[in-house]
Amino acid sequence: MRFGPGAATALAGGLTMVMLVVSLGGIMGGAVQEEGGAAAGASKTKCGNPSSVVADASVAKDDYVKVAEDIAKDDSHGYDYGSYGPTDFDCSGLVWYALHQSGYKVGDTRFNTASEGSALGGAGFKRYDFSKDRLRRGDILVSASHTEIFVGDGKVVTADNNERGEAHGGAPGDQTGKEICIRDFGKWEAMKDVYRLPANDGSAGSKGAATSVSAKSNVDISYLDKWSYSDAASHDPGGDKGKCSDGYGLDQCTQWACVRSHMFGYKEIHNSMGDGRMWVDSAVALGWHKGVIAPGSIMSWAGGAQVPQKEGGSWTADGQYGHVSIVESVDTKAKTLRFSESGQGFGHIHTSSMSYAEIPAGLTFASPPKITKDTAGAAVVSGDGGGSSDTETTSCDASDDTDGKVTDASYSGDGNHASPEDAKKIARQLLAQYFPKDHGGDQWSALEKLWTRESSWQWNATNASSGAYGIPQSLPGDKMASVGKDWKDNAGTQIKWGLQYIKQRYGTPKDAWAHSESVGWY
Image 1: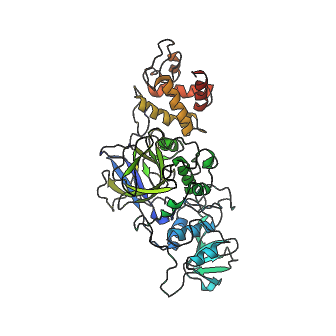
Image 2 (image 1 turned 180 degrees about the horizontal axis):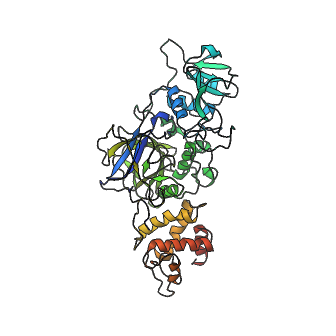
Image 3 (image 1 turned 45 degrees about the vertical axis):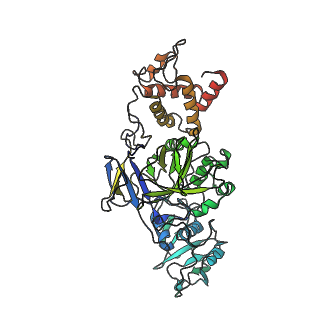
């Protein structure tokens, strides 16, 4: 057996990193940016020479209608009441997001239909009584319970309801092609107000003053620097396992990474992903893809890694806990990315930027499940950040042919005489298979400490007095033959047996570690 696809590896010292870099400005909000759909006809090839796959889709800065239309055409986005992107939206969330993405001063917190009129007025829109026969492209239509954008030719772009025909409880994304769509006007006949930019006066509405918006990345995240820790926590919509603050302190980098992931719509991210340095591994165990850079991707920094600052220079991640941050946008022309982060030293949420042409030592990435090797039209870029080809459209297949899953690509051996570090990588990959319902960073942390105590993760560790053998210290060692004949030499075989033992006897690595802490053995 082999562990991992043996493709995407982050290396320091001028070497290269096979990765996917996705810049999808077409549906990028002022706060967050979301993936687009796969480009028609994009080819799929196996990863070969080290390269990056870079996708780029720019959007006119102030065309909020186009932004909404692009979202409607991308079935990775569906309806969910109370959501305002970047994955799912309700009706007012879609309108707010499109305007905010285009630079209109509609506030950093989304409006609803009750407050929409006030927000639109503040952005320079003028109110008119509704008249179906006088509608113009770009008119925002508002009733007491619904809002949508008129796009011309008798059609509107709208977020109506989920695949059940309901507001709550639908699956992420558009399951029917009709949750967010461009359709004939007529379903919502109770429209009351029309909001329109002033005509023929040269005005384009009220835009913000000069900010940190990049003409290439088309995203303004400067407002995040004004958020306190409490502000950030107040924006947490919650995830599958509750609020982030239920497990992390408000001033921790992990708290913000959890909150921001929830804001992106990734509710599987939870409050026990482990220390910052563990987040990519924890995310991979949840189905995320290692080595892929996109808005919403997790950036996990090893202990002692140098984290760049937009002000210049860098700071050093905690030697024990490392650090975690979140990708906000990607500029494929300049080969830079912008990210947000938190931590006690900042005193508030902090944003920064860096080049991805050369990945700093100790930094790894993981992208959400929907961002894969097949996402969007791609241009191949050399691994050293060299010139791109705008004509070649291809995607890099970083999956493992053995199981069809993207796993920890940093180890590709067969497990025989694996080093302690490689043994840990094998265990990290296998953890989700044995504990599918609970394999987050807290479980990994427990397992890592348990087998460090037992064997220092050495395949040939032998207890001179008892005869216990191997990484899990099986007693006697030949018990592990039930998993494989190579139990004496293969770290993978030993780890499989050990995980099976823990599951049968204790239930989880955390419980096994607790027992070891109590009595000195497990």
